[in-house]
Length: 276
Image 1: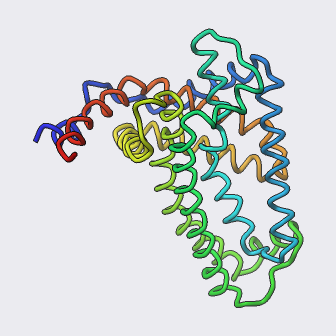
Image 2: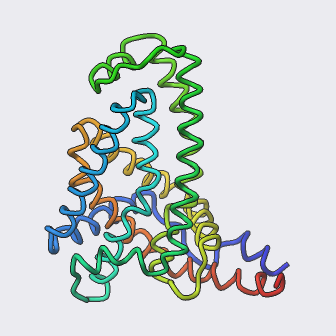
């Protein structure tokens, strides 16, 4: 009874204001401007990896998987951004940071962080399979043009393309909502509490925090989506700025909820002990 009531009511924490996302973005930008080469170099690496993925998709003739793959990359973003969390974590503590420490962050508690990444990757694979079925329903099995501009024209200027875009967006929203809830704070939490937290607990606490602060988290999700749209509109060049900004801001979002997360983790411990 105690654990269920703890889950039903907030542990004394006030709801975040809806505009909290803008404060996180400001704090994230401040982090990015400190040793900017580290943050924006990280963004360049993400940009290059994204273009490599796009090139591979067209090389094998999977043009209809372009948007699901790009959306999937956004779903995996919380795990990819671990190095940016490490920089913000060290800045929060007043410590210096190096590129090696950022790149090595993923090896701390790597088993649990990799498990979160694997689960999110599984969601991406299921979403891409669903996208293939949706494309077949609207376009048949005819090949999709192997040029970015041609794919854009097909999607936005033909009835079948528009229908596929709308349907795919609705289905994708379901996957995005689930992945956003479990992935919003899981990786930062595992990085911060590497010795006393497992992936399942981190994902559960992340989903609980998102639900408790839903208005603020919806605003945050809109900011992430806007950054993603900006990156697409600039041919992915926008990732160089947008990815570090969102990564650092994600840590600042977790920082604002760290105390509540700790109470939730503490509230779950007795229940886990009883089950054992």
